[in-house]
Length: 202
Image 1 (cartoon, rainbow, N blue to C red):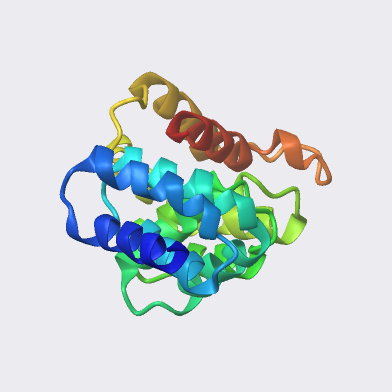
Image 2 (cartoon, rainbow, N blue to C red; image 1 turned 30 degrees about the horizontal axis):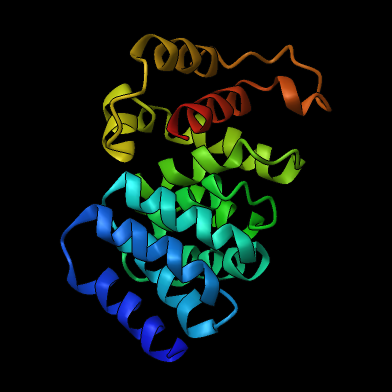
């Protein structure tokens, strides 16, 4: 009976277009989260889904096995040939509050695709790591116009951003304040921006 139910829930998540039914199936699949097939299926769905409500439900379920899940998303962010999947993997890592995917974040900041770079910049705010913060500062110095309001809104597809907040933090970055203490990571403008945007995105 358990295997039949599991298969039925997976089929429901794949085959129905009803968002509430998909969310309900995701929640019920929590019972099977230790099954690697189910775990990786939910991970794959999380980087392909467009619906924020469904993605939030997927993340809530995936957090029950966060260590293995974070490795999966890090690998996707580094190795996927699809830039949309790399970007979504970085965003999911942010929403998972993952602080162990440094390689993916640094590589993402250097990605050839703008949306991936923005996803990595959002993620970088979670790290109190000098290498990540330096990579973020280099990103803003080399490609300062990636982070416009329009590009942030397009990345998030989420109306909850407040333009004046984005503009205020963007201005703090572009002013390139060199007077900050070298070891004061919490006060760096790049980090303040990405932390604020991640907070809004959640």
